[in-house]
Structure formats: structure tokens, C-alpha cells
Length: 421
Picture (spheres, rainbow, N blue to C red):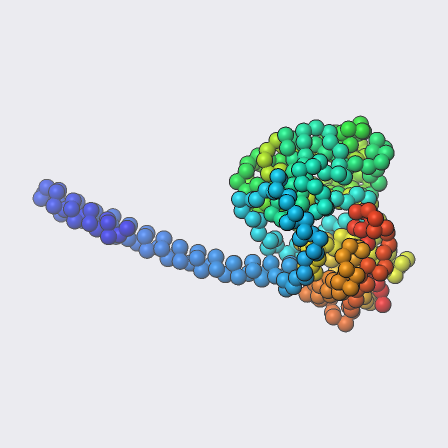
């Protein structure tokens, strides 16, 4: 840049009349000196920014390892691999950009799922691609099973609206204390896509709750309450921060309503008008509208009260990648709760015990349950709990607390128990 400016100055010095040449040259010389000084400063700042970026990249990599563990993986389930290679081509959708693994340690995440799962749908890889999801009913539009980046998902078409397919769905099937969780996808670069969650079954029930939860890529809105995800406060609702999947969590406790996006609570209503009786999930009429990992669970007794009455805490909200001992970020809610309890009650000692459902090989499930229990124990130690207050073991599928014949029963059996010793 500075070379170009000097060349221009030299050319002009020959074209300006002699009487004004000296004066012109002096002014232009000062101007050039300022330009060169600014250019040098800009380049120095650029180098400094690059150095800072490298430092933050290193920090983020460390944070990612803290969330995902040491990356130890297990062999993938053979049946799942067969499903993936079994010709699911009609609705096999490839993303333009594969979302990165979460880099945020959910250290302040306080959402704890309910104790007993009353509805669960991932959906299963056994679902036939292109068909309507078997565990749902249709209100409007359309929805189909699809494969997206190797994962089975529910794909919305023409602004689809779906409800859980349940017996007696015309009745209130949501208890006084419940939680709802699901993952919603936002295509990078696709603006103004959104989902809605109604707190009633639009096909079989009448609504008594006037508002619905509106889900954008960068925030949530419920009635007069709206809030953007941290770091996107200055974005319009339609701006896509290029994140891909968002984890949505809702907690309802006898009139109190809270809604989370990923690791942050965005909606907090102390007294909700009306009574939630069911759910309806709707997506806007756009492409790349997917959901997965839908779960409704019944709430329960506080952790410390369970220790006093039962001598243990049963948690099914600690989640892992399929057939792996790698924690999912949303597992930090229950883990943070256990950590705070142990800090508050320094006499508590826990045996961390892993359990699986009956899918797969029995011996493999036993080893997997042990590795998962160790991962949870290691996370508590990493947070600051003394190692001599913890131990771990695993029982695989040998101690079910529910049936393995339904998705809900399997979800209840896939659990981590904290047993006092």
C-alpha cells in the first residue's frame, strides 16, 4: 500500500506547476507519512489478532476435551450399521456443512430431566426411510423418516405438525411435574426457520394454555417473554449463527415454566396460565427441518430426599453417544446437581453404577456400563470432588427397573445410579 502511495506522489510532483510544487509536495509528503503510519499499525494489529485467535483456539480445544472426555470409543452396534447401509436412499440428506461437536462446557446448566420416561422417540434406525414416523400422529402438513448425516431423524414437509401417538391421547397425559427435551436442526445459512411447541394435543385436546413456545436458531419466545441465546443479542430473529443442532429443554413444575436452549435458560415464567395437557410439534414450511431425541419424563423427588429415603439417586438424564462412553453436553445438568449436593454434604460418598437396556450383546453391555460409570465418576472428580468419596462399577442389562419391550422402558433402564456407601 505504501509503495503505491509513494509512486503516485512522485508522478504528481512532475505534473504540478513549479510555484505550487514545493507547497504541494510538503502537504502530500505529510499525508503519505500518516498513511504509512496507519498501514503499519493496521498490520501490527492484524498480527496481534492472529496470535490471540491461536490462543483461543487452543483454549477451546481444551474445553471440548473436557466435555467429550478422552474420545474413547466402542465398536458400533452391528445392527445399526446394517440399517445405515441397507438402502435408505430416498430421504438420505447430506448437510452442506457438518456441525462441529459442542465446544462449550455446560458448567452452569441446571436442567434436570424427570425421573420416569413416559414418551421416548429417537427415532429408531429400524424405522423405514420415507415412511411416516410410527410413534407419531399427524395434525397437518407432512413428516417422514429420513437419514441425515448418518442419523435417523424426523423430517418435516409442508409445515408438518405432529403429536405423540398414545392411547387415550384425548386425556391429560402430562403430570403436574414434567420435562420435555428434543433436538431441532437449523440449516446453516437458512434464515427465518422456526419450530413451535404447543402444550396440548391439537388433534385430540382443547388448549387451556394461550401461548406456545416459538423456537428460532438464536432464541426462544413464549407469549410476552422472549430472549436470545448469549452472543446473539444483536441478531435479528432470522439470523442463523451457523450452529446446526440446538438442544431444547422444558421444565414444568406445578405452574412454573422454564425453557432452555442448549446450556442456557431463556424463558422463566413463575405462574403459567392454564394447564399443559399434551404436546404438538410444528415446523415452518422450509427445507432441512429435522428433530430427534424427543423425550417426555415425569418429575420427581429432590436428590437429597431420595438419598435419605432410598439410599440412592437414579438418574436417566445422563446421556452418552450411541454405544460409547462419551458424555453428551446435556448430561451436565444432572452431574452439576450431584456435584452441588456432594459439596453441600461433605459426608456423602457415592458408588457410581452404570446400567444399560437389553439391546446388543450382554457381555458388551456390561463393559460399556462400567466405562460409562467411570466417565461420570471422572467428571465429578474433575469438577472438584475428592476421589476417595467416589467409586464406580457397572451392571449392564442385569438389573432392569422397567420393561425392555418399549422405547420408554429401555430409556428408564439406561441409567446411572448414585448409591450411598
